[in-house]
Length: 48
Image (cartoon, rainbow, N blue to C red; front, top):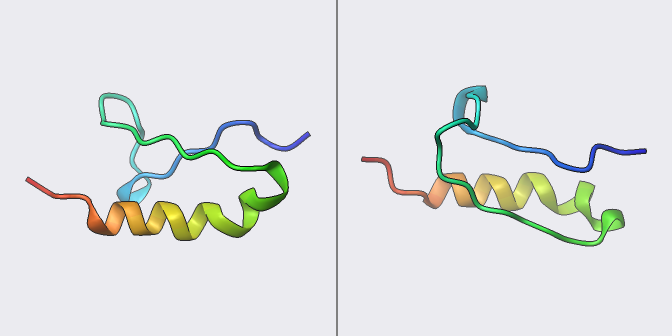
């Protein structure tokens, strides 16, 4: 069974204490879209 939840953060940081965005899709589409969607979100996220 594939992992049910995956996360991605800048520089392989742990997600604890960080804001989160949840992305859902059909399991067959996950491998196709996860990297591109998460990269786009991280690229556009404001850094303070």
